[in-house]
Image 1: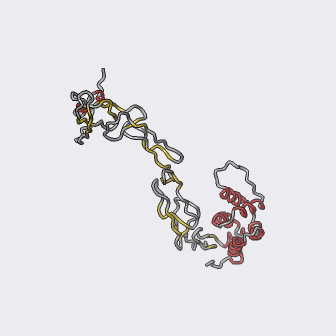
Image 2: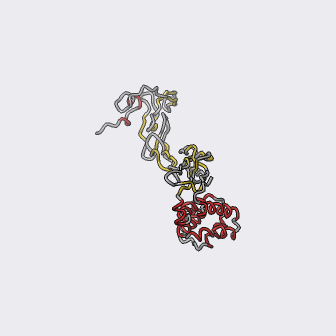
Image 3: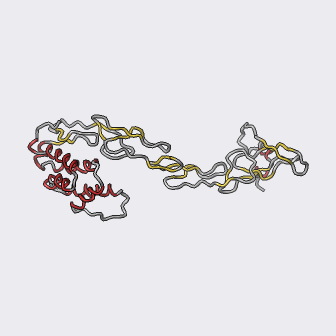
Length: 295
């Protein structure tokens, strides 16, 4: 018959090889023996076991191992092990599975932090702000306004502010000065003369519109005016992200005349401030300004 140390009284268990050799003092508890009415000093059961039988005048406490899905974490004299009643929920994963010595331990997934027993998604710093301190499983993202000479082009919980690139080399000049939310836009007069700024606008305008604070209803009207329709209603994107995605798709396929007419389209939908900003950008990219440093 195989040897099982948990079948022995606790006092004997402590001296056999099934223990970890620890010199930890064994805690005790008091128990009144039913037969003798004597108050006995019984040793407690170690973590991972429970008290199957109290000590008697002739033997020590009898301990038994916890059954599956049950545990005891500390020295104890519980009549039963505790049930592993912690279950990981949405946005959590199992960090440590239930064992005889511990309950199940859950941890927030990557990109989430623990708050009031829930896992909350890390805050995304908006374009123009960068991540000063990345979020952890215990704390949210900390954002900072991008200082002069740096930018962050996207809403992100990880992207930091980065320096504007230097353009002045081999005929490449700054066409549009960088800001908190976009990099310096660099090109050559030759490229500007060849396509009228089309390649620059196709790259730049999606970021421009993503940064503008446009009411959702107005953005929706403009997208519909441009002939873009929502086709996939099962997308995981928010409605704003979806509309901007369709807007960007239209921009990538538009010609230079269509892009130059965008300010008028925006004005017709009461987006006057955005139209004014876009008109200023288009003026800077006018081929007649080629060779003039945009400062």
